Image 1 (cartoon, helix red, strand yellow):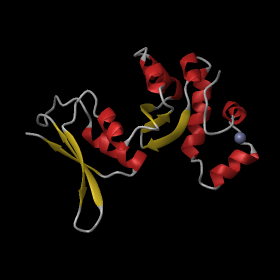
Image 2 (image 1 turned 90 degrees about the horizontal axis):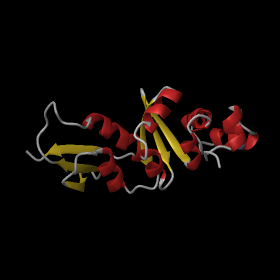
Image 3 (image 1 turned 60 degrees about the horizontal axis):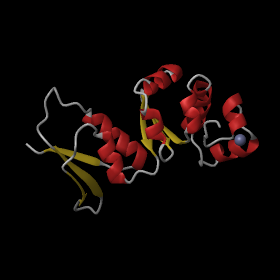
Image 4 (image 1 turned 60 degrees about the vertical axis):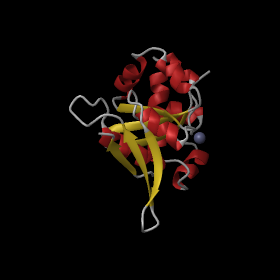
Length: 170
Ligand SMILES: [Zn+2]
């Protein structure tokens, strides 16, 4: 069993794309981040065997932060040992956010706001016909607030193209 990635296992091991994967990259079906992270994670899996039970579906890079969109059930595998994600981050030298690719928009937003339980998620239509997703979170904003709201907004935009409006209840 080895890590599944959007490129062939052989390409992920060697870092060299076969003509088929090269064509997918050129055609926009794969991104440079998908390829880079496939290669980096395959390397990391040699030392972190839990990665071999998971599937990388897509990767999205934002400044210093990388989102790994994984297969169904993979978060449970990597979440079993709390030091695992840190080990992966060290091994590939990137800050990571892990999500499952099949999450609904709502589930994704709820997941990224952990440990905060959001109050509501609503889609708001603006007068110009565009839409935003509005989230209401409990409490008020202060220094102790455990979630980086700006980062969540960037992640949701990068992963799903959703413009997220965040309001505090108080
Ligand atoms: Zn290939």
